[in-house]
Length: 350
Length: 68
Image (cartoon, rainbow over all chains, first blue to last red; front, side):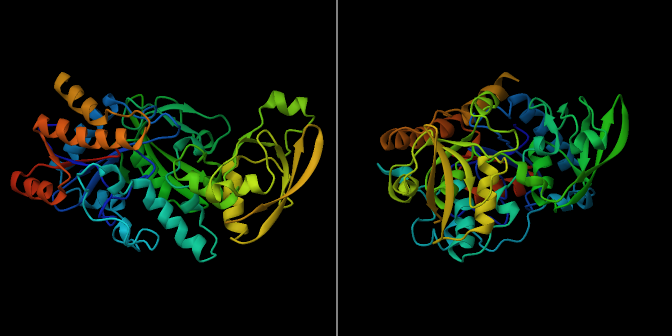
């Protein structure tokens, strides 16, 4: 680390979003940069409520070493870094978003209420989503399902390495492409990879459907693999762990937290595998997060039909459906199983 | 390696879930004091970091950390 200039930012206040583009649900993220703002790579991944499960010090150390190699090769390697550079943004800082404008100073107030003066990174994603919702516009997939974890394409990476495949899901896009456990992914879409976050950067910007080209090192030999992703591929991403999903629940479920019914419980309820079965795990109590409660939903209600949809889906998939199909102000019909009875309710969209 | 691990562990540290508002304030204030005491890090001052990188020829490591 002595070979780097080390900067620590603990606020998103006035954060330059034209440079710092990462998964804003993270509580720890790192950038490796040249002084001319060229991005060498990113670090920091998360797929679960446990913030540290997908990162490790060993992985960070290897990413740092790889960043130094890119720095030594710069600017001769500028062309291969092109795809890693930030994309144009509509708002330069979080406070430029309409929902955050005028609420925060550009620096922290290091007084007794310092935490309240902090713009959190996740507020950036929430503010972006509000621009769609406030305008009654469907949210694009990439806004609802940002920074897909590679497991959505069938790849699980070793957190102790840069981008080494630990598992390949049978039948997945990765399996069909020929990936194997132990493959060291050197590049994706021509971009050198320092970390799992760099893989996610490519996925985040990948179209739907997509064809992505990878190089992998296997038994000392480099190979080229092609990852074919079908239309709507990112909608299988689990976003339930994300802090920003709290606001999606306000918008779509009126504050209800929904859990997919376990297979055993599904069988006990005589529900087929293909049927919708989302159990109300938590009922919000305050403000717009109490809209579900006010509409009559109760903890442990089992939602088996909503807005005419009765096919199996996760809470995340339900978010996606409602955020793209139903705008604020409408009420959608839902049927729940409660103590053996079918109860019809209406859920307000917000 | 030990120095690296200690340095990064301190930076990643304080990953406990957010508590009461007062605890969050204490964590934010404590983070600044702890990291500044380490001496290696430029704290919450990105322009200073870029200036140091231009002067030294070193790359930047920018860590974004949500404390509370």
